[in-house]
Amino acid sequence: MAALAAPWTTIANAQSERLRIGLTHVMLADQAAFLSHWAEYLSARLKTAVAFVARDDYQPLHDMLNSGQIDALWTCGYPYVRWQSQLRLLAVPVYQGAPTYQSYLIRSKGDSTIRGWSDVRGKVFAYSDPLSNSGWLVAQGQLAEAGIGPHDFKRTFFAHGHRNVAEAVAARLAQAGSIDGYVWETMRKQGMSAALQTEVVWKSRFHGFPPIVSVLGPSSLKLDQLQDTLLAMAQDKVGRELLRTLNLDGFIAGSPAVFDSIRQLARSVPASGVGP
Image 1 (cartoon, rainbow, N blue to C red):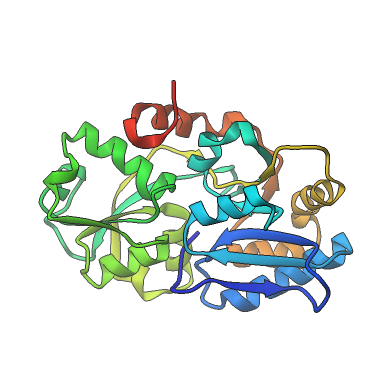
Image 2: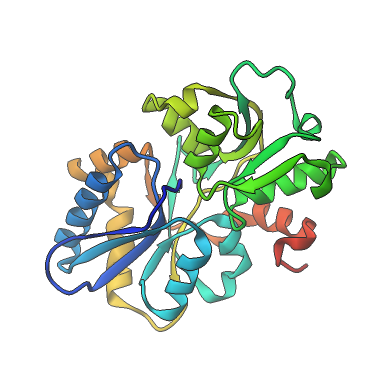
């Protein structure tokens, strides 16, 4: 999921919030309208007010989840495996027929100086989020294989969102960046200039798609109903239209095993916070 400049909240109706779902800012051109429609859809089926709460980064969202300020969170596979013992897996999106996606290495369009990871040495490089699998963790594994350390760059920075990574590389504020392949492909499908002005030079193996989670605890009827509603979205016309806008096929219950490749990668990166 990609970030914009400021946090905001979409509330399904004027009643008190009863189910709050956190997420990083989506990459859609008209994201506020989309989240309003999705909140209305979920509210009608759950018979309770639903709100989407967006923030730029994953860490504040996980803090909100742990403190009870939100009830569920569309997070990334990396924080999921990092805090798996504390999280309940509610749903995993299905993208192009599978609950997986790839990380991309992108460059400014036409920049032939970057053909792979070994070429980012001495360059300005953009990451997405320190808790992003595709926007940080995958890059750490590839840089280690290429023998490139933090001091081998001219500069690195966190763009706070995959959309912002694409925009930074397109504007040549960075010469390359690590980005969620689903986000980049969806931006390209929507004709967003940042995707059209960048190009992919490398794709990772497939990893578990960013899941929707809640805090692990006693059974919750509203979270059970949220899970059932997400899993059934592909079965009705309005749900399919929402999924089509998200460039997704649907949701499945998934299992921790979907994220084994991320877990394996995290264990190989000393700074990941995931032990053996």
